[in-house]
Image (cartoon, rainbow, N blue to C red):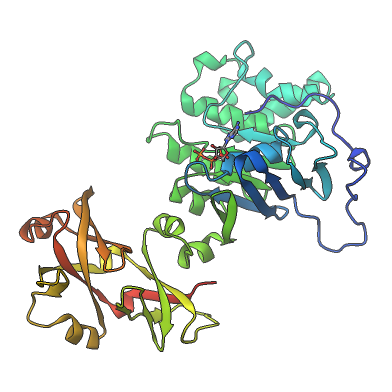
Length: 401
Ligand SMILES: Nc1ncnc2c1ncn2[C@@H]1O[C@H](COP(=O)(O)OP(=O)(O)OP(=O)(O)O)[C@@H](O)[C@H]1O
């Protein structure tokens, strides 16, 4: 967690002159946070909004710019251009900057970062005290917050006398004791034992619902449990955003598809199907409420790995995969099934199953989860030609937005 912010809270009027104060006439409350920033040295050009009371998850591969977004919101980094607004006030722009300790933004990170010489109670009371709250009141507030995270009986312990999970609970109490207007979570469960993480996840869900939160995570479970909305950041740019349900139901990138646990196949709409660049026809069901479906537009299909069957194939002299099963790929495709020639890229254990990653003719990758026995019977190995069979009813098609 960042150090509790000492000093008085900046009033809306003390925001830099280029920041309009929230409009009293506006019916909708200002978003809790708005970020529209360029950081040239990091090749980051990001826009994101956190409506009041909503929890936004930022997801993306390593180096995508997630921590940069958190640093901009916290006030540890200034944008080269653009601005950060909290509750309608400009707090960062190239011309002006409200420093981190004067923002009501708290961060909960992998390490709880409690002050080692203070008891749990004093750690939690520290923030309110630093904001000028009287000691008695600050201690009362700290007790309430400790109670709310199930740590009332740990009030007198010092950080080295707490388990990892207990310390993270106390850190949450400390964060909320200052009535933050924005809570930043940076992989808050990543350093915890797998036995402890679920309880802390439940606690975070309980204590943070209805607050403005920005969460960075690599764990799909956190998305469902801790976020309302999600933004997918790739190479410093927001590429897709929406509710968690929307984004995971219609992932628009391989990264988002992996989070959703599906494979993504891209192509062009050809009547009712999607035609891949490699010439494969992808039949499926149209995602609900789809608009813009017409021949020639770019489209994607999502394929659940558990719905993919892998059949042995012999390579033709031209090196093209053909089905070795009695029915040819074409006749299979005429039934409500897809049959795609492919080549195995890799095999990996997936619980009791084996995850087979195969490459279509144009190099797009599709995963299949099959029994380990089938993988052995088919003598699957990297480079082996196969035919992937998927029922059309288990493929979802939508135009690429
Ligand atoms: N202090 C820094 N100075 C210069 N460049 C940086 C600095 N920190 C990060 N970067 C660069 O900025 C880009 C975005 O990095 P950032 O740490 O925001 O990514 P991230 O999505 O948080 O990654 P991860 O998941 O690995 O934490 C990367 O190219 C990174 O190398």
